[in-house]
Image (cartoon, rainbow, N blue to C red):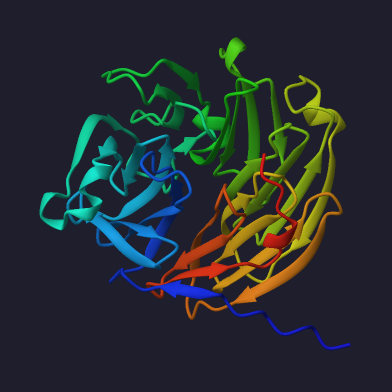
Length: 334
């Protein structure tokens, strides 16, 4: 039987003039029913768009013309990181959305990450903590986005001679858990309550890890590598010291490298942004491919799910943000 054709996106946002590198959703405290999308691009532009109108309502360049590497949000805060390791935590004046002449943002504090890798900072959902590679490249730094500070809360040491540089990060505040994927293809897990060294390390890929995420329960792990493989691991809890010995792994060979994952908040759908422009959807519970969404004419760099509606967005090298309602009807809001 021939494969089913890819569904079309329900819309697209075309406000950027350069490749889109990162996407995140933002809460609007003035209108709780409104879904706001934050998008960053290679020319340094950051746009905030209203998904109801599919229009940009705010734009700025907090990093000048430097490429935006990652965007994260916590309540009304935006955490941005540029390609050269400069990070900023800043707040938007929401009341100015309706007054274009008064639109402004203010940086609360800045932090420094390593400029020598494409490792994106990671924020846990609905929490104030953030992790990023330390500028020394020898550690992972843990920051509190609520508290301006020149030094991180803690540092997790990295053995670069053994694992290589850090390439991907994941943070779970609920379980005090941090994971990192490395240049050598391995993944390590830390318990922040015992942060002196990793509690486990697993060799999963023959080349660098390019994407990494975990389920909220820490019973499933998803990794992708430059070797064009995607791995899904299951375990009773990846906080256990024996995780490296007793995990069950399923591998998928992909036609292109996956650069980013997004796991829907109900855990039912995993989206993968591929460098061939395709967005692939997986069902984690059955470890199977559900759909391959084709819209982007060039590489897809970022994917994100709306925490209010389950709507999927994707952005890439073709300057476009695509909106998808595929499987949104199955979404269960927590």
